[in-house]
Length: 200
Image (cartoon, rainbow, N blue to C red; front, side):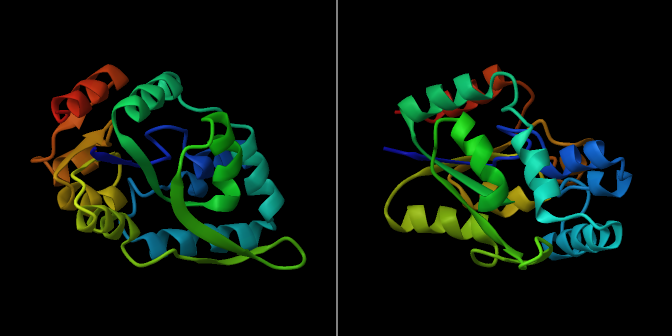
């Protein structure tokens, strides 16, 4: 059996921080890993904005809880799970992903943890490990699985290149321009077809 390693935000669910931006009107929070490749730089920006604007964990939790999976995502994930072992590998946080994972019927997800103080402020985060997406693929390969992977952002690139086959899903023009050799799927039908090519 092969393993499908797939990103979460932008592939199966909307961007949680973009949802927070829309709820608060803070445009700076729209920035994602499609815009800033360095994850620590991106999170430092997000936490600074939250601190300066007085936002707490409850605010970002509410933004996440109000979201639903992207149209077509549950059906795609059901098909994928019937043909692959599936691991969602994400740079989101367990605390934020939980309500969306429930709406997708609890697939396996590997992600990070937020550090929240007694007053409900997000004061930091704990990474599962450095370069976690590539390391997850390597771990499955060490178990003699072939890995097929997809993601949409800069933080997915090392995962896609480590995988036996990898492709982008609805990436930004900037990501596509910077990685023109990676195949691209623009719809779930195309994404399903690409995964189907590697069955057997």
